[in-house]
Image (cartoon, rainbow over all chains, first blue to last red; front, side, top):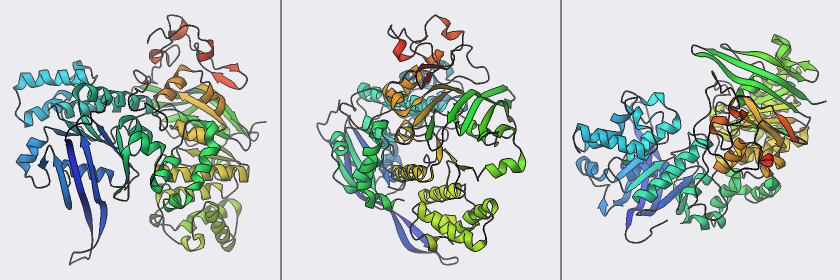
Length: 290
Length: 334
């Protein structure tokens, strides 16, 4: 499935995002920085998925937000389709966002409760002044169909739907402008297993059909594995290991990735002892995150 | 005699739309020193089951029927002080969110010694000494100096360890852990699960672990209860459940899990279960899984509710089409 030929679609180089820690009541001063993302570089090629995996506070979501320019990076470069995003102004970024879209974690918070499903899905078309009212509505219906959401419900509101259905609405919205890259930020972590499988399969189908590339950000190692061609493991603002998914998972090199993989519960009770013994080997690394 | 025997438990919630049958006829037993996993997706009734047993259901919910016999006494008939004596003393509990289960205005030490003094009548000094031992037992580094810290100085994993220390402080015979690691990172989760395992064998304490995560039950439990739509659909030893799952729901759930190990994972598809769990105000008349089941035929599935039956020694299933009795292939979603 991976089409790893040609120029990379997204090239992130030496990306840093520092958040200031301020002190003082009258005179505000910066005493230190939280290095949320600390010198991170990676690439995503057309049609492939790069999985960005890590625990809370590792900087994976902040990295994604810096790629999207939803957060302004402290330094570093984000090249998308050969254009440098970090130096762009609003109008330029708006054009770029036709090609660069996002699916958020929480389908309960990321959809405007006052807008109908149809308006949510067609809003990107409106913002970019594509088509007229009628053609936008037709597009919305088609998009909903593509993501497996019954277009008969186009005039309903998001609260009427379950988490899985809402995430389909969010995906339809992301597809509206026919992007080449979608940043998926924990797209299934709010969903139950059986629904999670539906959404992951949908994302795979859409990728095959439209040649989408994903920057797939998640904390669940199994979910990332099932989606990704290549995987980057993040810890404390840095990428500690990066490579083809199979290699990173079957033969992790970095001590943190090793400990992380040993910590994943495996649904096989016969391996309980073996897994526990494996974890004891990585106790030093694990003790840091008690 | 089992340590705890729950029989035919029913807990309903009154809402404007009607009565929600959150727990609808749940029965199980747990023996001393064993670990029982209760697994299921959101809304299956796994947490409500435990809250019912502990007398923690509040209006508009109410336990309408059933019994929960713990060491010869029916917990569902106990009230006030008697129940409080058992809760926290003979039965310990830990909950999902270690961030909100501790009082932010009291030191960790105060919160542990409170329990020791209330239930065991220890003096201030005795309780303090015991509190340090307990923190050491749950592997908090520098226990004696960290006793006087406030909860905000502890990480999520450490707070959950404090909750465990409080829960085991009176040497309970049963520990109920409701999604104890759901809010934690995977490396922290591993430590907490290993700790539970260690304490269970050291204290000969029975543990009920409630979770949505099949991996978590596989790595901890001896016996597993799978719940769906307020009912137990399968109950077996961990080995038998994972080796030979019988209920179509359990099978589908296991196949829907993304894998960390193996080949060709990237190109494969996950098995998904069509639709979603039924409305518990007006649940399906027949089998509750029938509307999503690949094996539900034109027979009784949609009309008559299947009983929980023992398909082989120690393996119980509530389905008319368990894996080992199936001849035909799936007939399509009916």
